[in-house]
Amino acid sequence: METQAVPQEVFVEFLDARQRSKQPPLSTDEFFSTLQKWYNAFQASECTLGYVAEQLGITKIDLIALLDMLDWKTTNL
Image (cartoon, rainbow, N blue to C red; front, side, top):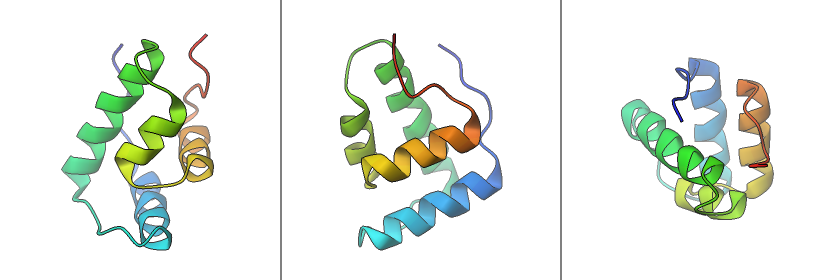
């Protein structure tokens, strides 16, 4: 599954979420590629949304908020 480009404001929200989780920041490129990789795996039912959040170093609630900002599905059905 191909995903669209991620707007800069979503990246800023992501960095805030990582900071709240006491995780080091990622570069824009690292974030975009990691998000797309794990979101595609989630959509293919290869992992859970919680696992995607863990791989990004943020909480599941923060991930859901980011996906909502992108208008991406938070279910893989």
